[in-house]
Image 1: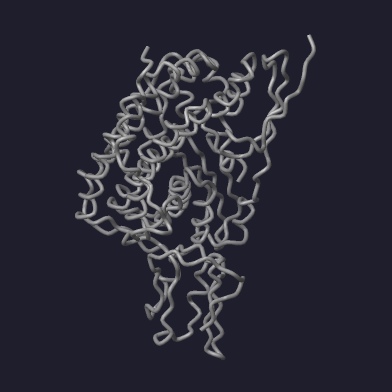
Image 2 (image 1 turned 120 degrees about the horizontal axis):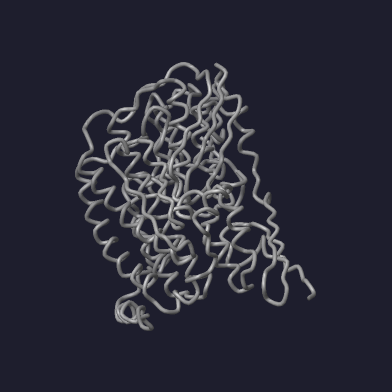
Length: 109
Length: 358
């Protein structure tokens, strides 16, 4: 029966620097392959609608006639299905997780 | 003697997920416990009729946040068996590595919650601090911290190259060192022992006849582990089930602590043996047939029954999660316990109610 099994660990961490970082004052170093916010490059898009078909939540809406592409970031689950499916490679997932949303609007291009 | 009914949950600081228990109490001793589930039912099984079978992996992964990868893996395995898809060996090894990382993260989470259940908050914080280190590795390799998003029908979506694998193994060594410090406290500390030893004893026959699975069963002395079925890379990596003979909450804690180190050994073995090759095969056509896939989740054996009828949508999808199999045992151990032991006993089955109710 040990009454002081925790004391070694507790003392060690009292003397060490805390493992938490003071986010948001100290920015978080993003990990290289983390799946963050969806980024769209308008120039290469041909409005084929494959990204809309592959999206599991239908967060992407494409109107071919008006050449418009829109994504609802609040519906997007950052699965990357659209990124894998796009034939022109104009979608990618950045490592940043995006800022807070103030309204439920789509990002329209 | 007069009986009172104390409602426990669904909102309670010690519960990780909402379950309701009506505790029939006679002067601080619980005589009977009547569970109610259904607070987090989302109707995910009905979604198969709307989502295509390849898209459904995303839903299967989100059945649970703690055991998410193995849910996705089991679903993929069920579809792959129906359609006779040969999964490449490298994909099987990658699935094993991610599956075992998922097991370590789940057990560390449970250790933290158990410490919190009897008030040992600093130990809870340390367990979750170590879990954060592991979640960083998972995010660096799979892309997401909790929802991995890396399993698909036919293989895996991402690869771990040799350079990254070396970094992963180095970090796992550091994590293992820290896990040894923490598990020493869980196993040796007298205040932990006074709350766990002798609480909720489940005999070997009871555990087997009530249908327990996972660490709950293994801590009562029954050596059963679904990984002996040989799915993923487990036909080449042999796993010896970790057992204990006492059957009380302390035994379950010790079994989960030892499984942490067993999982680290499996990751090392898989990383050494992983073959080169492709990570996925192309899937064409629709599934037709039915299959029950069984895998070992951190909480026990999960059964995925999938029925397909030749169209893009499945006809039926049913999951039997390990927590559902352990709830009768939990109710049995609650009979005759002290009121203060209720949080410990509810947590000792490692309840994952969102899996249970989908």
